[in-house]
Length: 240
Length: 240
Image 1 (cartoon, one colour):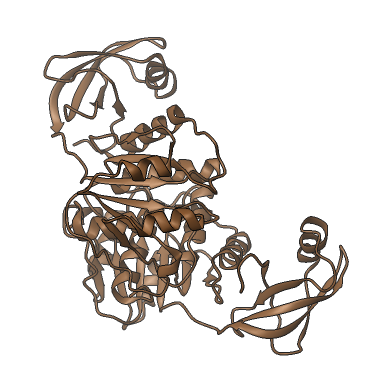
Image 2 (cartoon, chains in turn yellow, green):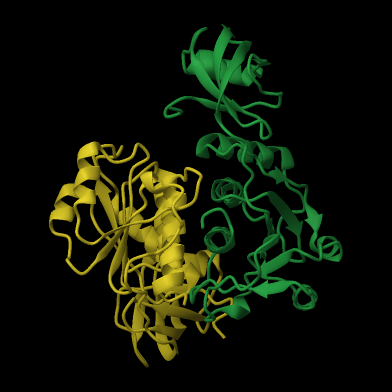
């Protein structure tokens, strides 16, 4: 039933009869680009209230209002998996965010490491990518993309109950197996240059660390992120 | 030992003492871009004879010759997995090829389906992408990228002993499990518009078909390709 309909994320409450003012970008897209008029049906979600079928009540190029009719999908959360990664080149970072949302993670945490190229990220741009990916893949939840945080600080505050999967190149040749328990988890993907000796030592000292091998070839950071999320999802996540 | 060295694919025999003339593009890259001179050490592979350490004997911007010294990695084949996919937008098709090589497949077969957008592909460009990915990920093998073939014809000639994993959207919600036996296999990724009813019926009639679910969200074709290869590799491939 939701096939083929335009699906938009909004940051407003959704519920039966609720009127939702769309952003000017969204109005432009619906009316100017997709040629929808009042009466057209779209789908809305806000990350909290499920997915709703809504009808355009007003449809101008600069402003549009949609009224929610019926819930088409209940709100669901992806499993409690974080993706922690050192940002790489722009296109590949965008890609990691898009794919993490599709595959299903709860939070995305870019980290600054000794060898990370970028000193800063455009958090707002990455968050917008996450929204777009959620619109595409019919998720009802949008993972938060956090601001860049130094790896040191993240590890110091690491929650005791969260298993940390480290895709360590030293594990190459080991079986690709998710060895940690079910429950909160995170996947850590290092920078292309690898972690510094310091950082690697700190990681090895973490009480809830689980090394994860990803086959005999050297994967790029973006490939490693996707493969690791896939394996975890199939073992402990909502792909089971 | 091979860390940090430039690694190039050549289409010539490799062996102790063998002199290899590099292409003019490669010579330009080594000498013009990377500023290497005679005596510099690089790594060579050709997809058949393993990886060799070689020394530049002549190094001009238009021509360079390297002499093989010692084998640094034996020739290895990825497991007998094919990736069959309907080409999508250029950047995402490039991406699928790059990732398939990193994750490890034996052959890459673009197929023409009822809903495939592109009538043709640039096979030479995709093959060059595969070479570049192999150079990056330290594989000694480069999968062949076949020319675009109609799905019908491929299915008519389908080898009896090759399990065909179909990432069918109808399987959404099933566990993400590789259910087929070890041995020759292929992963089939449909076009963004899905298969036609005709094609789907033909697929369901294949004797060695194994449906594969990839979680509750709708994955883009490129994401599905990567996730499916990952699951197969961890179950039956060289990631075990």
